[in-house]
Length: 297
Picture (tube, helix red, strand yellow):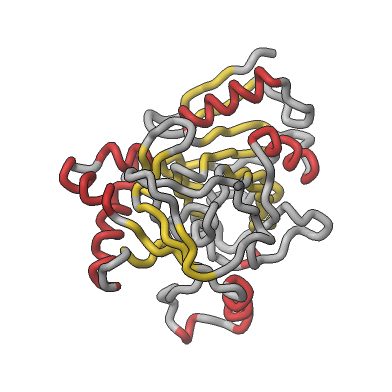
């Protein structure tokens, strides 16, 4: 069967048919999928019969893969696979781009459905390219000049009385190595040349501005990312895989399934160091992530 690409929304998302993810891809198919990912930012596949090994093999068509996470434990026996489990807390219930607190965040993320709740549990994926295009010219010009510090160690704004012992332990693991990295607020995509807002939940402060000033600017820009017209709302079915471009999207796991079991497995593709409009690269303030993903020379 030939590949068929069905657009899902105007600004983001496409459903792919005619690809068997359990078998190696030919060069033409892999190139067509890369082109589709560049165009649509997020791709949805049927993944019947795909296991952890198969997911990793598929994702490797797009580049080397990272280990599961810089600080969080992997699936047993699969060091490159991260369990995204309802029993593991709600850390993903905020808008973010994966692992932006390291120097070279993943270029792409794959999520495969293992256990799907009977209702709810959607994943929202937003196009930060569409968000950038939607900015007024004056705000776009300002954003082009800004740099932001991303960190995994910040105030989650959860009242102390609402944090139990298990949640405290998970947070301690997540921040067991502290990372602080400065990225351009507007990132230039290395393959398409598109500009996108590179912010999200790990972006905590604008360089040279106070925390209060930073929050106002980041909230203003973030509001363009999360406009409904920029979002794909994916309702999971069993045996699906979603691949999205982590360089130019944000995502959010919706907590609307009453604590029912929900489990996805995540595999990410190693990425490049972000580059801003002025051609300058991101830089590290604190934290070594070489065990997670090497930086290409």
